[in-house]
Amino acid sequence: MKLKLLLFVLIASRLTTYAQYDKGMIKQFFDAALTDRTAYENLRVLCKEHKGRITGSPEAEKAVEYTYNLMKEMELDNVFKQSVQVPRWVRGETERAHINSSKYGQTEVPVTALGTSIGTGNEGLLASVIELRSFAEMEKVGEASIKGKIVFFNEPMDPTLINTFAAYGAVGAYRTTGAARAAKYGAVGVVVRSLTTALDDYPHTGVMHYDQEVKKIPAVAISTNGADILHKLLQDDPELKFYFRTTCQNLPDVVSHNVIGELRGSEYPDEIITVGGHLDAWETGEGAHDDGVGCMQSIEVLRLFKQLGIHPKRTIRAVMFMDEEIAQSGGKVYANEADEKGEQHYFALEADRGALVPRGFGVSGPEERVENILALKKYFEPYGISEFKRGGGGVDISPLQRFGTPLSSCIPDDQRYFDFHHSGSDTFEQVNFREFQMGSAAIASFIYLIDKYDL
Image (cartoon, rainbow, N blue to C red):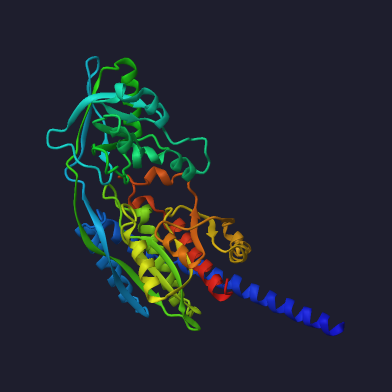
């Protein structure tokens, strides 16, 4: 009995020592991140010198070279590119739009073409407008009311939903499939209210998808202020017409690259922990919150490990995925090549929710592993990071599910994220250094604990 008691005391003492040591290590991660501006400067260069990096563009390839050289200069154990065939969509000239009303004259409004949309042609498109709030309403009014008109989907993100990603998801289909559905009823074009809770003059772009069995029609997003103006004028003048001009076009696919940097594992080098973000970004802004920050935070994880002299047990990869915004080619290629090479993917985290103040982590995967990972919450509570929940991942790492890999996402505060998302206001100036580096430190600490304790 005394021997069992002694053994229990020794184990408890040992665990307490480990916990104190790890708390000290996590403090070192946060101290190092919050007193070093390397990652923030790297983000500035990416945003200011390599903006316009939509998939397949020359700017995207310059960003590939920038991040490749950045990681080579860090003297990592391995840095390489992974070829990816990606779509090539070109926005063309700056979009123009105005409302033509017999009562109120001509009123210009801000619009932006949706990704992969066809253009209107040089003359633009002028037609009557029908305003709809749902697909159910569109089905109800039918072809008789829609044929030959521009459909205006004016359903806002629900401001009463505290989870803004849920609000975004609830109306996202108007952007992604609105044009394809409206075309079935004879619409000649589509205008979609921007997916944001903000009221401003920035139209928010994003990808859309056509139905190959239905005629393709041009589609644009209109700023929330512009949508409110169009709505009000339609109330007084239902016969008004809307004009917009876009010159976007879809070109043949081109070859681009994922960019990958590694710290080789000291005990289990064949087991891979992936930390990544996507390098491509909509060219209406600078791609700062979406997703330059995720890329630079992933690289920062490796830099912090090196600075603190930590040798991970497993190989840690920072991956700059290409083509998240349009076809997700980079994530698919990454998983396919992992399959072909027989790689063991132990854990994966994607940072693609901006860099506002970090709140926690989401994790999905085998229940026992998820439960153990979520128990790490106690280490992060002193930093105000306490939202640890089931359900996590990202578009680029989702193909790794086939290996049974636990997937995770860093969860920053989301109340202002959709102010920037896919718009011209997504610039470097909107990223706060301290919030950004709090996220970097949190991700690095999270990966450190998962690797150390074989979680």
